[in-house]
Amino acid sequence: MNPKVDRKSRDSKEHSRPVGSRMLKELLSWFWVVLAFVLLEGTVAQARMIPSGSMENTLLVGDHLIVSLVGYDAGIPFTNVHVPLWRQPHRQQIFVIRNLDRNSSDLIKRVIGMPGDRIKIAAGRVYVNGKALDEPYSLHRQGAAASIAENFPPPARDYSMDGFATPEWTRDLPRHIVNGELVVPQDDYFMMGDNRDDSNDSRFWGFVPRSNLVGTPVVIYMSIDAPEDVLQSGNFSDRFRAYLDAAEHPSKVRWGRLLHAF
Image 1 (spheres, rainbow, N blue to C red):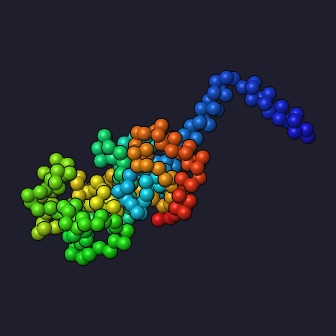
Image 2 (cartoon, rainbow, N blue to C red):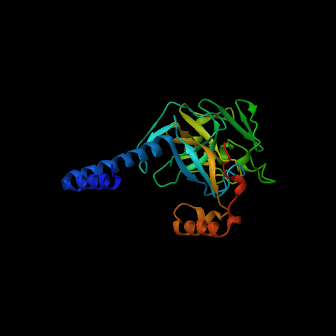
Image 3 (tube, helix red, strand yellow):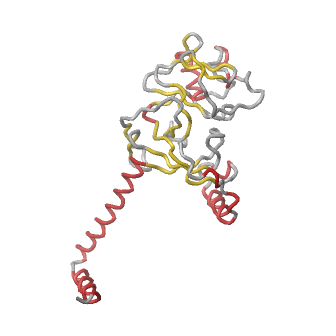
């Protein structure tokens, strides 16, 4: 058998098919490609990048993560269509939070309070149900122990958290304070960044519904040393230049962080 003749025969048969048949075959091929992407991106894993320092030193600006959605969330990529799945978060797990409103970007924070937990922060120390939480990952600014962010819930005279809390949370916060502790409602979570004095988190905007928890990071696949403002959401041209700069100057890549698993 001559392979060249056999290949020519197959090509001849392919071209002899009606145009509609060939188009249908091509469309079906692309359909399976798109379906595979939707299934992987929507139910298995997603790539995320850290644009701010709110999770330092656990996660650094410029860290690129693979986030596992398996068992936590299923959805259609690039839409707000999603369904929470059977796996439930655990205390001190890091989670990606789906945008809490349509005008905000996704966030990444650590689970501190579970449904039903009683939360109190005193001089930067977190207490859950009356017991101090062991937090070797937390980062605190020197001299900030007396700040309102490091003492929570705040006194009644300052539910606005020195004006940093959202108006909705300022109104809602008193309803959840019992005997000086914050009580987390059912199906909600209290989330904080590890960089406690530079994190916009549940202290300032409230609880996170279970339905907004997307998945948890599993590995850092790339880490680039770049300024925070360059990597903020929306600065795509600056971000692209940062990647080019890292390609030209390998010292901008934090090689020691690559393949760090969580």
